Length: 236
Image (tube, one colour):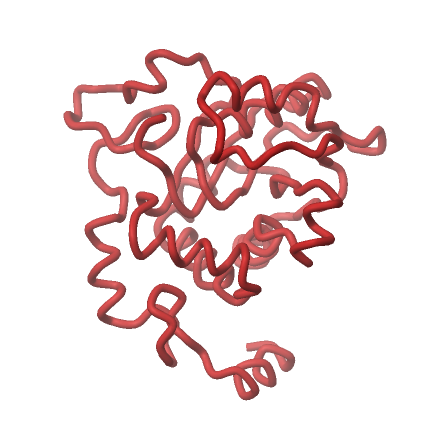
């Protein structure tokens, strides 16, 4: 553990990111048992990674209806209690250390797959500067840094920008989400197009955000774009 992390743990004792109770091991035993039923391990959509009912089923209902720009993605858990409450605390109540635990779980579950994807770069989905100033941090960047350190993959937090301030996506329908994201993202001219990019965000819902960013990146010359999120919704 780094020196600053040791000091931080001493000042603020480690707590479970899902129940908030003191836990020296991070995720406590009780919450780990609860999370087992939300972990996506069975047959999954070959595109977005949502659970599907049968192993013969290649795509979920959503991905059969929508043509995505990204190549493939994976998420750790279904977006249900206690995962949704944990992410809410992480995003809006300054529980930045939760990102360390999320990243460790993602690497434990998908490290082998990520290495097969062989990304040249990790890019966190950016916040608009107005929202970042209000919140004080970008939750996707925190997870990205941890993943980069654990997997020894460079992280770029500056090249991808959200140039238009938009309403929160959770308040919008599928088509509204798509319209809301037109011309929102941009890549700085200094960005050097690598072959494979891994995008990181907290939640995957419709895939419109990932698609919008992917389209910008592929126009710049990136060949393949994968994504990784903490949780995933179940339909629109």
